Amino acid sequence: GPEGGFDSTPIPLRPLGYTLKITIHSASNLPMADVKTLSSDPWVLGQISADVPKRHKEDPPLQFRTPTIRQCLDPVWDEDWIVANVPSSGCRLKFRLYDEDQHDKDDRLGNVHVNIDSLYEGWPGIKRQTFEVKAKAGSWRAYGVRAIAVCFNSAKHMRANLVVSVEMLGRTPEDGQNGRLYTVGPCRWIRHFDPLLGRIAHTKEPDEDIEEPSNDKKVQHYNFQANEIQLQGPVPAELYHRYVEFKPWVKRMFTSTGVQGLILGKALHHQHARVYNFDKQTAWGYFPEGPCEAMTKQFLELVHYDKGGRIFTYVLTLDALWRFTETGKEFGIDMLSKHTMHSDVSIYIAFSGEFFVRRLKHPHRPEPPAPVEETSRDHPPKHGKNETHPPADISGGPPDSEPPKDPAHYQLVIDNDSGTYRPNADLLPLLKKFLARSLPGLHIQTLDCQKDAEKMNRMKNEQRERKKAEGDHIVYTQGDRSSSISSSDEEDLDRIQ
Image (cartoon, rainbow, N blue to C red):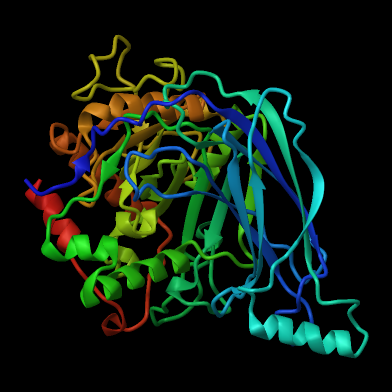
């Protein structure tokens, strides 16, 4: 078969490192990127690198994004980022400051580099140290406005600063990662409302769909929702998959080589940026204590519980970032590849596929995280039959009443149905174990997209039928199909499988 899929390359062995808490406190005297408001909407992208071997040079770097502070030149974030296995030889921290622009590319406001030469037990750390923001890579427009402001005495000086702390939390405990760098936390969620389906005045939420009296069928635009959950690292080392070269152009797309590869890669990066767009509507939340029942409840909130028979496409990155959106032909979205878009054209990921959530008639039969029925990887359950919604009509929840909030009422059904990366079905139990730790209290059932194909397709068809019966009744639209690149290669591969 084609190259790609599961990669058994081991993580190069090295000693356990140290766990650091990096805090991005604040910035001051930032340049004015918005001429109209004489202000900026600043955010910071942090990146850490160290002299540690990788399995492959294409493994993505560790990065962390702060929320955006609106119309502020002296923003305060106080955002923590906890990273494990930083080696005794130290690390390099790079902070890029940006101005968020809803309608255009975000302007770079400058960079800050922090070099830590060595780490050891008792290292004193960096405590609220001020670093000058280097304007070399900054936007000429932003610094041009700042220069004019200085001339007219409305700004004190040209120099901007960033305040950062780095705290030593001690040796990283044995974690099966052979010393690999990864994000421990904090666990957090981000909900994006995407303009891909049209930014119009009457964009609706799934729960706010109100029938409008009219003889004509009106197109009602849906505010497409994309979700990210930073789970507590590390992802099990065995979860490691590469894109599948099922067509000659796929490798060029992932490596951005050749004219065709550059065009396809750029188009997919653009799609990712549009779907996971940050703007004033973007919602955030945190679980500093790590995996907890509140985090499971937030996941259920993001997927709207068992409402409307939804099916989701997901990617789990190597750094335990879980991205997912609702999927379905009714969205009318031309994606070059759903999973490639979610991964932002990452050559390597942990896992990918699809999932959906069902509500159980008997929440504690069996106890979570055990599934309510067997798959190719489960023994037949000892308990009696436990109906679910969908497909059955079960009282005490959607569509007739509000869903119960206790996670024990729900089952996550997740598979490896991804032609882009072809995750190894033998690793589904490991994925289930990781998700059970990350989302306590939830029943979890895994499906092998090949061995359980008949059952998986039946269950997904039941979801689709339920969506027709009680879904949002919204016509999903996008611009002219000719304005985007459309390809069914991934779906063709899925059918071949």
